[in-house]
Amino acid sequence: MYIRNFLFPLLFILLILRAIPEITFLYLLFPVLGLFLLLKIRTEISLDDFSKNFLKLLFIYGFWIVLSATWSNSKFISLINGSYFIYIASITFLLMVYLLIDKIKVFQKLIPANLFLIILCIFSLISNLPENAWTKGNAQGFAGFAAHQNTLASVLVLTSFPFFAKVVSKTIGSIQRYIYIILCIFNVVILYLTSSRGSVILLAVAMFLFLIFYLKIKSFLKVISILMVAFFILFQLKLIRTGFEDFVLKDADEFGASRFGLIQPTIDAAENGGYIGVGYAVSDQSIITDFGHFVGEEKRFEREKMISVLAIIEEVGIIGFILFSLHIIYIFYLVILKIKIFSLKQISNNNYDDYFNLSVSFAMFISILIHTQIEAWFSGAMVTSVQLPFYFIYLGILLKSCNNILKNKFV
Image (cartoon, rainbow, N blue to C red; front, side):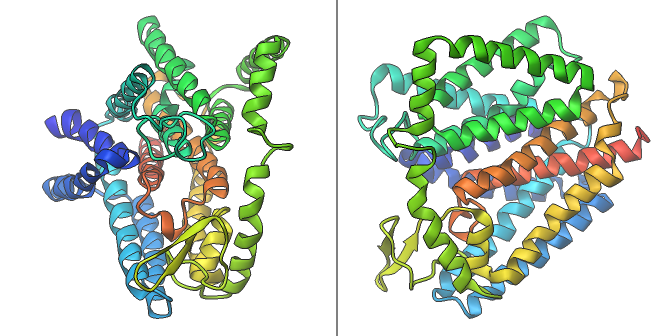
């Protein structure tokens, strides 16, 4: 039990350290500890058919991205990053499957990581450390000790979204609800300070979808109506309205203007990617922009990318994109057609955990698919990002919840 109560929260803390440059080396303990745990508990992991099918689809894509090293313009980078994708995705997914074996309150394991991040941000705000907390990254928001505003914001959302869902949970007591509300307030305030519009979209879409999946239509309309009225009233205040407009536009003339310079190069690179791409985790060397830098002795250009769909096509081609999409299609088939998530709202409180976990993880899964079209962390160049393991954390929870629901004949 100490593995689940101590080592898993520690694992999540090590994961978010990837976002902090000064101590990012400690993140190396995450894949090492993850492998250690996996070897220690390997006899206790019982893979259901859903998880087996998912891993097969994952390895098919993994094989293709590793194979892309044979035609890549940087064979070593494609081989290493492709191998790391298979490694980190597999161990993260399998650890989540194990964590849910005995119906552990899995999302509670994220609380220490989120609290650690909040405390670190509060310390940064009070002490004004580091000195570039407001000027690093895009210099348009608070980054604290993180490398970039968007990185801090996305990790906040990925670790705190279950708490927002818990606020409307049917089975927690008043004290627990107040604790989750306080956590949510801290996360919202810091999220606002980062000025990360993409992460706000990530949270808003995930919460909206969760309410659709979890609440009955009458309750859903009631909650949405209250939120809309509250927003309308607050928007009448000039201070709120001005702050909202500044947040959305970020000193630009129109929404998204800061991203326009990334879109056309991304489209051009995807067109050049063709059927097999230029190689996993590398950039099309015929496209040089202001959004990137040269690395290595060979002066290889690494371009900042946008829109994951196009970034994947650039790197591993249309074939690679199709192979990557297989697991997404499988998830939608499983949750909507097999599990029939929209028919699960009559589940009794005794079976609440699996239904709640499924609603949270499926909502976040869809929201991540949208968010990655902004930040493109499905590309191979972002394989070592802090966000990617969270994707497979939520997928592990999703698939195990699906299996538990069918196994116990909740539907």
